[in-house]
Image (cartoon, rainbow, N blue to C red; front, side, top):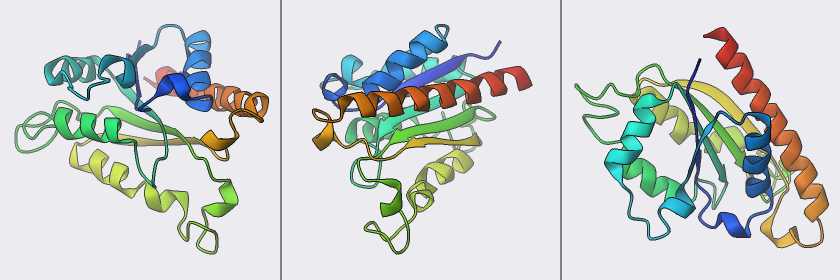
Length: 187
């Protein structure tokens, strides 16, 4: 049985509709997952590096769940990676603790999908913004397993479109759960 760790990198999960709903639905769909809610564990951004490294060592599959903030991960998730993915732990001549672990990124965007094209408002595809994560996987000898993404669930529309956002989040959670089941069955 694969050990799966879901790392939620939203900086204020209580104020989220989409990411909070995705996590809630995942807990319903796959109750045996381990959840690492960084905003609850580290609201002060003081990461317990050893504790987080132990969680990663036990995991076979790691899912990073977050909203895209300014074309990247939220600051809390960035800080978590900066501190936890240390030379000698995750990379370097003796850093092999993440070797072979599968990484899935699961994220939401405020902008609609059509904004993420060369001709669109962002002027880049969503895949262009994922290159740093793919490079991290390569550096840490992890297996990048892909991304589950949901577009157009902006913070600004959460009041008037809450029902629609929750429906998108449920679809997202189901897609991620199916991906996780497939990986577990392959092991």
